[in-house]
Image 1 (cartoon, helix red, strand yellow):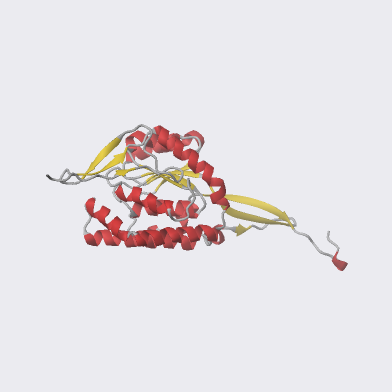
Image 2: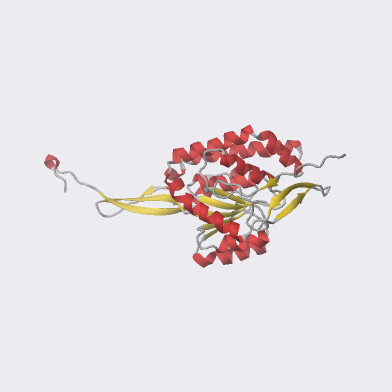
Length: 293
């Protein structure tokens, strides 16, 4: 008798754990021949709310970590991805890429993580300033992470687009909730397995699968989300997201880019998710004999 394959159920990733969606729903992912590749969770509003809670809980400790430590962790993610290239290649092939295209996408994804690992302890120097003032004070302006970021990842890029959106978010000390591609979700869930074994604290990155039509309103209107990044080409959906995001004046960004081009990896994407904090510090004048005045 012909053997039935045991298909993997791709779970969501919230708070460092792999729960099934609370609704119990899923959809069958099929290839061009209409063969079922996997069962994929169909996330709900409750899943998104749980992910935001996890991201907020993780924000304090992640943003307080040293830039060097964040750099180490991003580099570790790249190492782990390098070690699982075969698995990611198989999933990219299942989703319709050629062997050459799959190899290129994985290599670019690894290189992108290394790129942002290198920027973790450098963007502050680039975007900070010492401001001239007319009193005996130092006046510093420094970037600080904005908080919890919701990301609607590219629909047409299974791995590279996902990583290109996540890396600058967490490199800058933010946490995020990501909606993966609906038609190409396999690598996104497998990438969450890489994150779970790469020293990244639970809750820093949370990955959901499901439909944009059902979830994008919640991604953009949730009052505890500080910024939203939209990476798809549906202009009507983008317009609705921009309108919803004004409810709590969260930042709204359209990152609909060709992620295969090197110019679309840069520290300005990190800066998009930073807030500038200005501080004053008095200058102690030392007079004759060491007296301070």
